[in-house]
Length: 305
Image 1: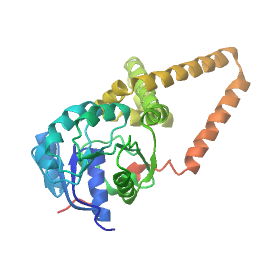
Image 2 (image 1 turned 90 degrees about the horizontal axis):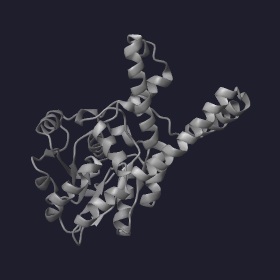
Image 3 (image 1 turned 180 degrees about the horizontal axis):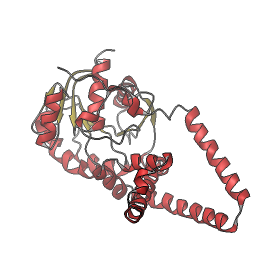
């Protein structure tokens, strides 16, 4: 694959940024990849494992001369980071992000983008419960969706970023920002909130049952704990910045839950069977669409020596 961007800057060096670097190296997509993380410890770890061709000690230094700048920081930090780097962006550069919420990110970053710089928001639908620079691997995005929400961005640069994500292994689609946030409230945000809640309930019960909840965890509960192990800062920001859509879907979930409660209380087996049959079909659709690959089972891309 030919180099697509001479210099790429990754601001934030967690799972997504780390995986992007290894995937870029796998496909030879960038002439140079520079990185920056707020934590000195994270920068030190990145240097130790060979993450990025160069690690900078400031975001300003990292973005200077970069053709593509990708903000891989929590949604709540997007505004301050964008304000910091904006005066130092190269004319003609593309700024993108990997945030799980899009309307709030557009509102936070958009006002800081100077004339002559292109802003193309993005959201790779990929991840594991692991975090930090050592958690990344090149295969993370393979056969996973990446959603672009161009919001009026330059069509050429949007098309180029689409090809970039495809070269990283993703399937790519475009979506309007508010619709994206509603869809993700259904497919990701509310399920995470439910997982956090269920694990919290089990923790309270576990104190009573002397660790039996932990020792005898069945597969369903283990799935909840895996989801609930995700980065707490990231998910705090997701819920605070996608409040309306999450509350709407959470309200619908509550209504469905009350209906199931009533069916169980009344012994309405037909309702339960019909409901579980319908939801089982959704699960089969996910499998048929190839969206049940466990990314955590992939081997990591080897670090540079």
